[in-house]
Image (cartoon, rainbow, N blue to C red):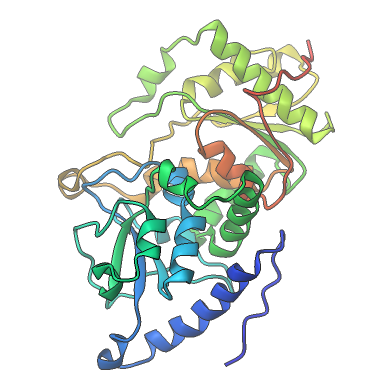
Length: 348
């Protein structure tokens, strides 16, 4: 069987390219062999259980470089499985990309096998877990264990960009929603910039009316305005529109209706956004809630639409936590800026 012809930007380390090739060959053999011979193949399954803490989208995906390294060092096929809606409801492997989808014949356990140091486990060749065919680890690796790998920040930036571009593209139904949204807003691929402002998250219980009545403070106003200014400055083209989004719809409402960038104030740069509610992917957080309530993956579409609109933009400004940074990395480039670490020129 021929190796995959992988053209990745930025260029991945040799161990990543080797693992991608190995995984493609081994996965195909694993799927097309008998049950008796499948026992010779070991797998690392990164799982988000319904009744356990998984974190948000960025938390669930930020640890992939470390799990990829562990899988490569221990000769395991890497798979990803979410139970708080399926990851496949929102993302799919690109054509000729890395197929992380869990085969249907693998039964999921409700137990995480190990939550300690991956480096320690990798180096302990006699650990009993190395004999386990299906090793289940949480999507949410603790930061202290990530640091043990010794990757420099530039290496993590590069690794995460390679992995994200080769692992994920929007699922078909979501892609239709993204296109419709971009067409409605007049956004053209790589011809706009994005700014994401992270604030308090919303659950399934929140109401749009409750969000609309919230009033933001001066500090939040400054940070939001600075985020937009940083995105525009980084894009270096004030004729480009700026897509603004936030984890709380009240912030989008402020920008579109009351900020210096509101359209009725004739601002020097066009800022657009969507006031619809965003629900954090960690909610609801229990198995009972999923089974007792009638929920559909489309309830989380707004946050994935935000994520991919950032990914399709020229530059991304982000601040707290990982969602905006994830959008920046999905672009595949390095046109990004942390607005909390920069005071960008005001336009007013």
